[in-house]
Amino acid sequence: MSVYDVLMERGFIEQTTHESEIKELLENEKATFYIGFDPTADSLTVGHFLPVMAMAHMQRAGHRPIVLIGGGTTMVGDPTGKTDMRKMMTVDQIGENANIFKGQLSKFIDFTDDKAIMVNNADWLLDLNYVEFLREVGVHFSVNRMLTADCYKSRMEKGLTFLEFNYMLMQSYDFLALNREYNCTIQMGGNDQWSNILGGVELIRRTEQKPAFGMTFKLLTTSEGKKMGKTEKGAVWLDPKKTTPYEFYQYWRNVEDAKVEECLGLLTFLPMDEVRRLGALQDAEINKAKEVLAFEITKIVHGEALAKEAMEAAKALFTGGAKGGSIPTTLVTKDEFAGEGMDIISALQKAKLVPTRSEGRRMVQQGGVRINDVKVEGIDRMVTDADFTEDGTILLKKGKKGYHQFQLEQ
Image (cartoon, rainbow, N blue to C red; front, side, top):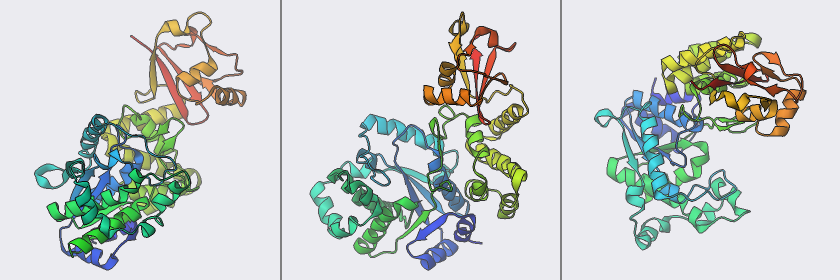
């Protein structure tokens, strides 16, 4: 089975530019391909993880990945999927984020002995001569056609800046630069990048008279079509300091039933026979599949030891225990809870279990909040130093799945 068949069977492929030619290339040659990552934050997210897994499958099949860090394109901002212009970032911010991305991606992709390479498009984009760029690249792009692209439509109402309008040309030029320097023939990315990828494929075919191809992957969405990877606290990050391994594990443990099989296929390396077996489980049995999903993804991202720790912590909480080193924890002092203590709403907010005080009040009034597994009966409940257990913790629980503990500083 070729890697194209693997990606298709596992549910990755959404669109391709030249399907039969791509299949033949991947079956008979060792191709060089690239995926771009704009370093707009100081960590990759779950949204990046799907294309990273596709990259890993490609590398396992003998193809060479290029990880393109968008140090140059990030200074302009991709308008795709956004109704507002992206916040402008400094060169230093972008550089710091790019270095973090390099470290994170090295956990999933083997960069030794040139098996994969990482480049930064700032190396060629920041020194471009504008007039030469317009003559070489701009001449091949029709404004009329560009305006029909989905990535620009959503910005037209609020006003699309000329800065953002250049993004498609810059990304297309990236592909051309990588094709010339590394004989890169395939660009891959999320399905929301289809228009930008097409631009690069056509630019290479026109300027170089050489074959070039594009492939897009499925976007991780909920059944309602919303992007997966968001919680009340915000994005689900791959950095354990921003999203703890326990929180990461719990996110996948609580994924909706209808998405379990899809996520197993896309985000783990389990054989597809096992993926289908787990995905076919019904009712309460589906929870076993969710535990496998959560463990396997956490193992890939954070390592087996932390995955086991997160799994054990989740099971301890489910069976009523308050132990487990992976439970989200905030260090506190006894003084914060001395005297009258802290009101339950403030405690919930300190633990980041509720975004607003009104949400906290609602949860308490509906009986959905517990302290050390005892239901909070009213919003006048104060959390005091008397609530600390022998091991110096207070465990807050919101609903069935939200946990946080306060731990006394030693």
